[in-house]
Image (cartoon, rainbow, N blue to C red):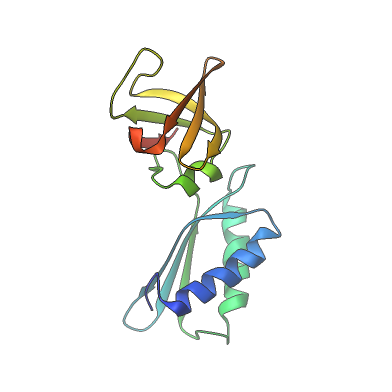
Length: 150
């Protein structure tokens, strides 16, 4: 089973339904076939942060979903995004609203400089609203070369 297979999508949907109740967001999900089992790798986020207790709680929820329904032989890895995680998709920016990121723009100007830390204030379609020192700037996601959590 691969990440975008119909079976993986069904499992991901069921996991999301269960995690929404606890306000966890899935940042990344992979179903990795191995010789004797399938490894399910999830990266999760919560507005209050993620602890090892959260990771254990989510792993147990996933285990209950998978047990007997899809797989008998599987392993689960749950982790937090961590500092330095790349933010690439518009969905990532939405998940991390109110978080600080280091942004590298494709082209600097007077209002924005690459390598500086901004707070994600809002996300509108492909436009980001970033704040630094109480000054808001807007930019299109395509104007960003790289962004990472700090």
